[in-house]
Amino acid sequence: RSAGIIGAPFSRGQPRGGVERGPDLIRAAGLLNRLHEQGCAVKDYGNVAFEDVVQDEPVGLVKRVRAVGSANQRLSEAVQAVKRDGHTSVMLGGDHSLAIGSIHGHSAAVGDLSVVWVDAHADINTPLSSYTGNIHGQPMSYLLHELHTKIPVLPNFSWLKPCVWAKDLVYVGLRDVDPAEHYILKLLGVKVFSMSEVDQLGVSRVMEETCDYLSARGKKPIHLSYDIDAIDPSVTPVTGTPVAGGLTYREGVYIAEHLSQTGLLSAVDLVEVNPLRGQTEEDVRSTVSTAVELLLACFGRLRGGNHPLDYRLP
Ligand SMILES: N/C(=N\O)NCCC[NH3+]
Ligand SMILES: [Mn+2]
Ligand SMILES: [Mn+2]
Ligand SMILES: [Mn+2]
Image (cartoon, rainbow, N blue to C red):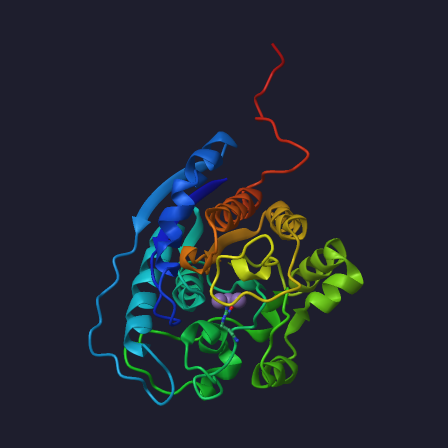
């Protein structure tokens, strides 16, 4: 395995400052050394340099459109470069609007892909259905072929073409879904394992059904887009929109372990870590270390232990 790390210090998909600190916090917690120690080749591509957009009036209700469009165009190029070099792309956010560029760039590199979206939220509002106008609640609508007619022309988004089919998308962890989003999920027949299904089936059944569902449409590269707020706020409180009743630490790690073992994991996003949303230092430490553990599990770390292929007892 090999990981190409991209920092995306970007917050304009939502109104709360601090989420742009995510990439450097996750690096400082030792992600690269830990990946190396577990036998993963690692290349750090640094942080994407985002354009400073000054005049960015709302377009209808949609906020910070030009900044988000420009940022995601640059992120898409960065992800394409990482994939061209043959790595699994690891995008450290930053807010979840960055999934637009991450998934677009991944698809530009590998073609058809499947998306596993682990999140308390569906992030599938269209620009016209969103209450808040914050684009981090909308990224999936920009990416789905089936919603193309629902996306107006937006400044700095002319580069973007939809690249995901609704039948290649699976959600895990949903527990805060708007009516418009629920309508879209039902209309398009998107596969959803909300927290109700996690409770009903258990996480191992959820992941078994997720992988069976996706592989029935051919073994496509998997894009795992992990919003840290999928995990329960008791474990990962420093995030913009925490929602009670989330995944346990163990469930969160299991999801990553399971997808890692498919051998199809081709890109990972880890987004929405916001240190300014914590009450204590421990809140920040707990959230950031959980983010690191989730990523280590994406690259083959197992709780039962690992050993190098060439290990020999002395
Ligand atoms: N964390 C969020 N998305 O994952 N917040 C925006 C969506 C709220 N409906
Ligand atoms: Mn999200
Ligand atoms: Mn979320
Ligand atoms: Mn969020």
